[in-house]
Image (cartoon, rainbow, N blue to C red; front, side, top):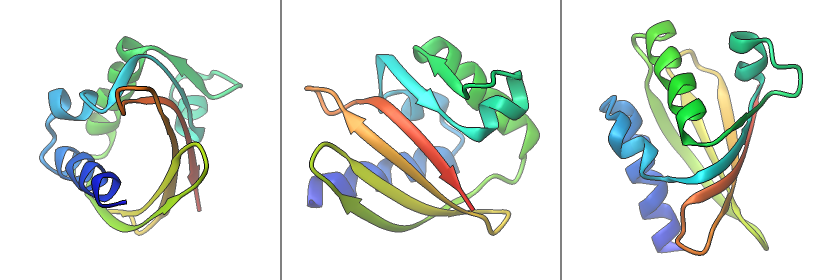
Length: 115
């Protein structure tokens, strides 16, 4: 649990520092990422992005659209095959990322839920 919390805090800090290289270190090359923001930004009805290149493009667009972006960790919930990272955005919205790691501990599946 401590390792997961440390990883989540590193991820949050990378976002708050706007450090794309550090953010992307948390994802596997073959990551599958699902989010309502994918539908909004790219018109993909399934909300899915595949691979780090697509995901990085998505995150860079997020920086552009939210210049004051800031995450505050609320909690980390552990499950049988992954973790749920719950955080608050600069907008006040509560967001939860369900993350399934690969063998190396990098996110291979991410599903984002927002209030």
